[in-house]
View 1 (cartoon, one colour):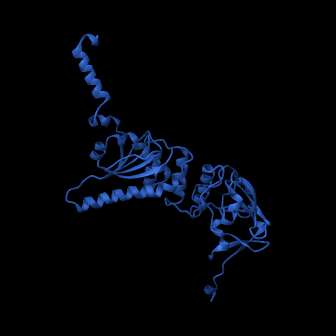
View 2 (cartoon, rainbow, N blue to C red; view 1 turned 135 degrees about the vertical axis):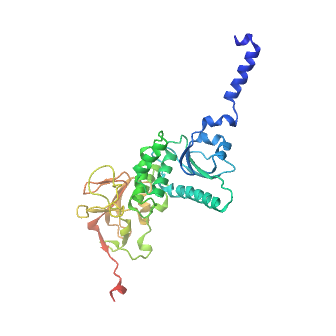
View 3 (cartoon, rainbow, N blue to C red; view 1 turned 90 degrees about the vertical axis):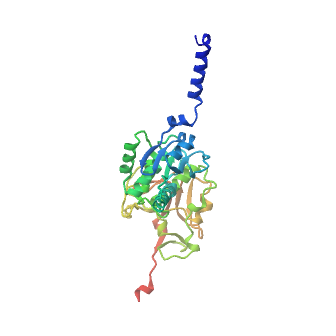
Length: 343
């Protein structure tokens, strides 16, 4: 029928062209941005297709939490490489993401107060679909700025954007973030254990692993905290801060994510016959490329304990992953005595 009526054919072609090859005026149909609170939007990668629409919304800063870095001239962009799967370490990047959002909003506020004319300035946090990675970052931001729990912050976001659906790994990482009082603490027991587990997942062959996961050899530096020495030769082996205390019990999870005495997991020392510690520099040669084995004193070679990147069970029943355990009957604790304080 259309072929017999040239004018109808031209109209249909014109309509189709406008529909399928539309310009910026039609791009609002792709817009998935949702306003979370003043100046803060959550969205997807499709929102980046129309920079003009972003500008109309007052977007000046874009936090891209995705697998590919976008090209967005004219915007302040922070790119965080992250996949939406269990291998991704988003926890280590939360503080810098929140800082980027806060700096942008604070700069906008300062600019508005010092200017006679107020110009909107907002931040868009996006991932691919606007449902998981960006939702995790926004939830962390709400937790930190409004002092909310994980559940409170996530529930608030779900009310605003019902289709958000974080993967379980990100929820677990946000629970760890809450346990650290929404502040990344490299000295935290739970963060050290988290990093060790991520290293095991990322480097299954245990080669070329980051050297910063190894604690400084206490024999090569001086410190006032308690140290532990080999019972045979008195060689200093590790510091008290290297002990990764755990909760008594059994199961696949080595640590409780709930706050206990400042967020640090606590073990009943009377039930544990070993200290589980972070790897120390003197262990490096024995650990790299090897899944499990014995831990020997670097000086006298006496057996101190064992290690297993897949984990070992403590005598209390708790499964610790990965595990670097030193038998208590092979080491002695040496406490520092402040003689000046006794005078």
